[in-house]
Amino acid sequence: MISSSSTWLSRPEHYFRLALGGAIVGLLCKGLAYWTAGTAGFLADATESLLNTLTALLGWYASWWAQQPRDRDHPYGHGKADALISSFQGLLILATAGGLLYLILAEHYRALHPEGVAQALVAQGSALSLNSVLAFLLWKGSQRFQSQALLAESIHLAGDAGTSVIALINLLLLYSGAPLWLDKVIGIALAAAIGYGAFRVLRRTLANLVDTQDPALLEKIVQILERHRRPEWIDIHNVRLQRYGPALHVDGHVTLPWYWDLARAHEAMKALEEVIRKEFGEPIEFFWHMDPCEPICCPYCEVRDCVHRSAVFRERLPLRSERLFVNAKRAWQERE
Image (cartoon, rainbow, N blue to C red):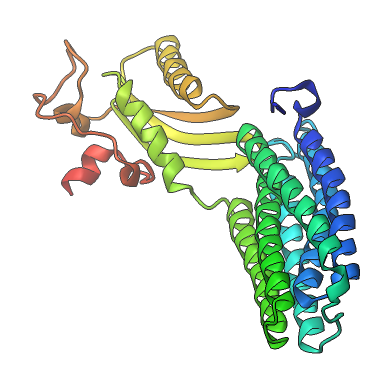
């Protein structure tokens, strides 16, 4: 069994080497299937394997680029290169889907050759098995390294395996006497599926490039903070999340007792960071701004024995993801 913890799969680019080798083998198998049996379905499937080869090369480069150390010109590192190259992969797949659609509509493909069906079945089945295994391995790698490029390649390989199944069914139907127009319809459907896969990749990677907030990620932070809530974290607001390759950046404001000295406040901030970092289990960088508490916070402040309290404690306000984003103390927001 292949393990993602193996030394030869210890870095994202190792997965892309594996994907590249698999794409080349898959392309040869599918090219053989199309050459021996023909059909628009096999043409579409072979085209997708050609795309796998190109996107694996691009992903390999993106992985190397994204891991370059931060410098004066890139203080957050080069992690965005991962999403940038993934977007280019999506555009490439989309353009190829359009070209494939043209070829099928113009009938620039080989019709069914019944004498080559048996050989095509073996070749296509081999490519299907290979792509299924590779899709799973790359998906595991994308989760491990938080890599958009690996995820895009995994989705593409999974889609490739799906088109292989359809192409095989199409071949068997044609061989059993189904009308020839069915082959054209199947080819068009596969080209459309390739284009839809490209759209999904583009939507995900472009969201990362423009720093679209991830509601699920923000909610996870809220749940962590609620489980480990400390009285001195009087209020947390103006939280922003940014993803740079495998690294997550968290910005926000934390309200602490105004009369604490800097050293004590700093220790409270370190404790908050450690709570999040420990549960996330991935690289995280924090940029917190410390706010002093104000009288408006007193009814919701849980700090005991505060000699500066101007109002009695009334209730504990739970953290909420929709409030974490607002650039204002939640006590004010809740009651206005």
